[in-house]
Length: 188
Image 1: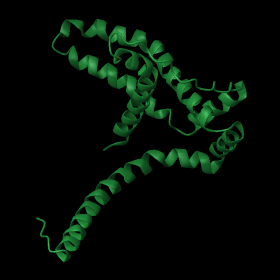
Image 2 (image 1 turned 180 degrees about the vertical axis):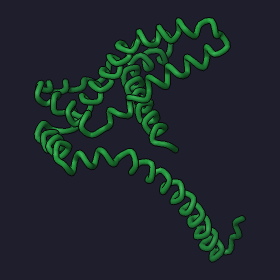
Image 3 (image 1 turned 90 degrees about the horizontal axis):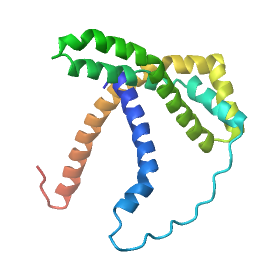
Image 4 (image 1 turned 45 degrees about the vertical axis):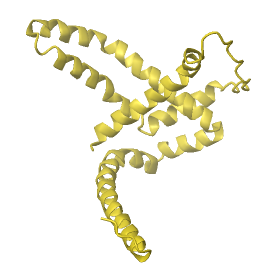
């Protein structure tokens, strides 16, 4: 699994999570039995307002951490899918390329919107002081080096995890067979 696939998976998970949380009330309403009044939703305390500085720090952490890079490959992948779908219509090629090029500023706005959503998630999860500490780390030489090495680290980790998963799977099966054998059970 490549870093690009991991990035796409992360962005998809983020997008899916946003869709799920945003549609939960609608789904509940759609699934309620006909003729029954909707139950009142339990009151949830309003989230405290986030200060502009808190949000700015969260955005800085989002960008400084390198996570936003994962969004960079998503929109070009969508454009590539569209190109592949139109391959049977060569007469569309020139116009399609012009349209995709013209839409790039709008797609950049969409990416910035997702960065804003992700920054808001960080702001809700971490205090302003914590975000300041994290931002300071990412500004430091060690933090910059950490972010710089992440693509290679992730690629190596994926390879290592695939090997580890296989090894642990085999180990667990051998151990379970041995322990079940001690109890008089033979497993294949």
